[in-house]
Image 1 (cartoon, rainbow, N blue to C red):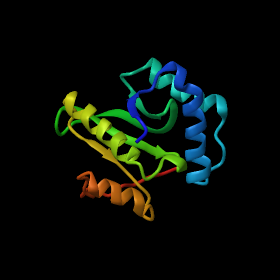
Image 2 (image 1 turned 90 degrees about the vertical axis):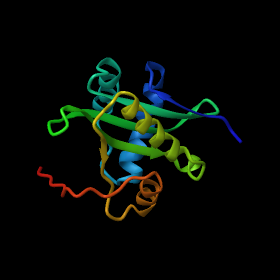
Image 3 (image 1 turned 45 degrees about the vertical axis):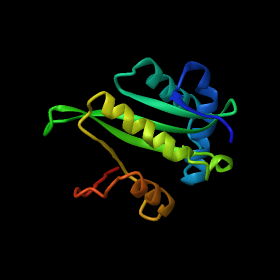
Image 4 (image 1 turned 135 degrees about the vertical axis):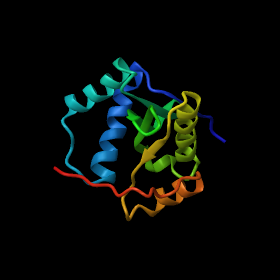
Length: 150
């Protein structure tokens, strides 16, 4: 079996992350291609400001094949920091090899080791593959209803 490494993103990962994140946005979510400079700035922001969040990358045989993005916030009810797992994505060619599970576990271990109140995340109602992963990993649907406004 090929060697998989899950680690925090580093400066040298920016271009690989940019390509994977573009694939995630355009191919997976069918959204317009993001402004390249803005997307690279977002990746750089997380590297420069680790207090705002963190990206983990999944590296298989020297190639970045997946990523997970945590953004940090706070829980007033628990008087602790909390994390939002905003993205978890694995490239097509690396799916079925437990890459998503290992990225999720890395995020979960990170918030537990750093004594965060919790980690939350969302997935599309029709993303049954992701829901299966999250159920398998011990996640449960929240009692809270998510609203949004644009």
